Amino acid sequence: MPASVIVDALWGDSGKGKACAYLSRKHDAALAVRAGIGTNAGASVTLESGELIKARQLPTGWLNPGTRVAVGSGVLVDPRIFASELDRFGIADRAMVDLRCAVITEDHIAAEQGDDHLLERVGSTCTGNGHARADFILRRARQARDLPELEPYLADVAAEANRIAATDDQLVIIESSQGTMLSLALSDDYPYTTSGNCTTAAALNDVGLNWRHLTDVIMVVKAMPTRVGHGPLPYELSAAEVERRGIAEYGVNTGRLRRKAAALDHDLLRYAAMLNGPTQIALTFGDHLDPRLRGARTTAAIGPEVRTVIAEVEASTGAPVTLLDTGPRLADMIELG
Ligand code: IMP
Image (cartoon, rainbow, N blue to C red; front, side):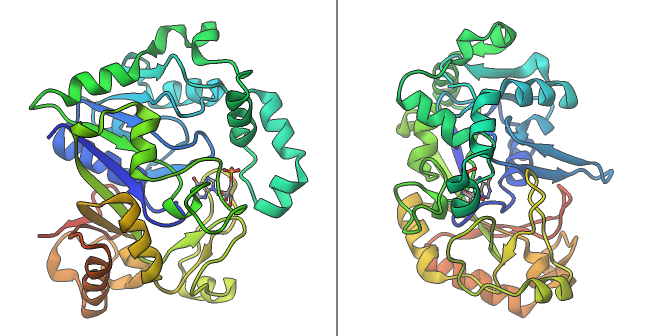
């Protein structure tokens, strides 16, 4: 089982971090690598103890003690956030950053926070990612290898991921970020997108993993999709209705209330499946769809409404739903099929 990619079908914030932690533990993954844009992402996982883990730079695969973690060379690195995660998670002895990653500086963050187009029109997280990427493309960004404080963690992550994935018995898990519908060049919603594509192919490119190693694409589908920032959201609920149902969500990075939809748009799901080629689906936030599912860990708890949604998602994506997420805790998960 050489390499799996976890990718999001829609607008992100769907529990890719939880899926990465869950699968890293289940398979005792050798290496988890972050793909995606950079620190504009925010992943959160609640442990059995109730402790909430929030991550923006490193993949949550570190929650499995035997898993090393890395940042792929196509991902923007904010050295302050990298250092804070090493420290908070106590993983300095098993974390790597690709030496070629472009670096986000405080100037990039300040430039985004003062950029009315990004702030007002796009609804950017203003975490410096777009400006840092622009500098990288113009070949004037600094790279991880230029910063002395990153020196102990520098690695050729692409070489390491390909080496491990070439073995028969060790797994590499790639945790992508954002979501397919936020892809710069593949979403119809430009300019309401992020600064790169967020698909399976983009994730492989962010890491430098040879596609021949890929055996599984786990596409995460959020049962009641959310979107932060501007742009269309089919079946959007009013903020009052979201509040009434007790399913309000706030951004890990920005604290913004997430816009929330009542149902999935199956045209978009078909498009996401076409682009990503999922072999499995993780259906997340099932408890928002049916509150009786909250915290359930066995298939007996799945009611008819959720069973219907599972069947519809399988029909649209052509892939089986193998994981059903039922709550914030890491073990709030039902394995199917
Ligand atoms: P930026 O990539 O920070 O400039 O944000 C551009 C758009 O993508 C905005 O609508 C953001 O809300 C959205 N976005 C960026 N990162 C994430 C994420 O990790 N989850 C959800 N939305 C995101």
